[in-house]
Amino acid sequence: MFVQSQDAISDAEFERFRKLIHEHTGIALSEHKRALVCSRLGKRLRHHRLTSFSDYYRLVTDNDPDGHELRELINAITTNKTEFLREAHHFSFLADSVLPYFRQALNGGLRQRLRIWSAGTSTGEEAYSIAMTVLDAIPNAGLMDVRILATDIDTRVLDRAEQGIYSAEHAARLPEPWLQRYFLRGRGDHEGQIRVKPSVRELVRFRHLNLQQDPWPMTRPFDVIFCRNVVIYFDKPTQQRLFRRFARMLRADGFLMLGHSESLHGIDCGFYPVGHSIYRCHSAAAAPSRGA
Image (cartoon, rainbow, N blue to C red; front, side, top):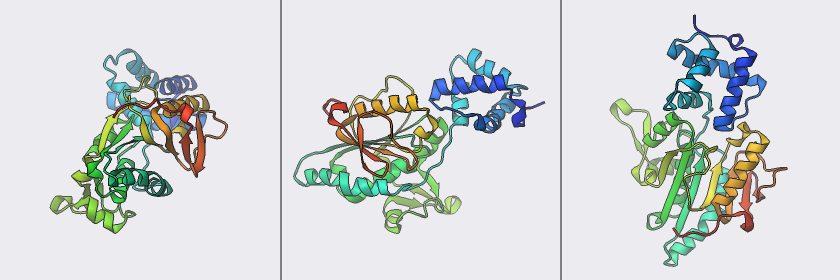
């Protein structure tokens, strides 16, 4: 007998998984997420031919020495929804208000360093949208020291992101010049697919990272951090800790981009608003300057 309905998970079992998921991911699951937990973790029960959520909890907590099943649990519970140029005003702001400084420095003969972090990058569309925005605004960006770090807690989506292969329909909202300049079109068995060109992919490094991890492995400060539609799954204390850590990872006056439904209202963390869901870091809260 395999668990299939949301009624199959008891109150006690749901509470155990809520605590476990919050401890390892920061995600705060409310009662109305019970059906989601049951549905997504039910697939892991069936995979292991287990008959109860208590059995699966014991597997994850007592019989998972290498953490493999915990990673599968996290992959199952996280939500991955993204698209190219999602919330386009962020990319317009990047192109119009952030990148001109770097373009001017480069045109002045200075080798300029640019670091951008896409935190919660999912299947890569955000990171590649950032890379294309940079290349479009600074055509000779190859002469710069440009790196875009793209991280996610879900290992499966990172595998897809690194491949950089998408359906042509999925990329339909991109400008036609970008499709011609930055993508390869599939032929034969790959008809109807496109792949991000190497010139774009080489700017991006995909890495597995749990935002709850402390410390983070990155040591050099960023100019811009995108963390959009991620913190909506966290409770206020977790959000406050995360935003304060973001401030310490940004250069003085660096920028933080949040999702349209996210806000720093009521959270004291070293940022002030400069646009819709766009924030700038107070110098005193920012990371100390380090070499490139």
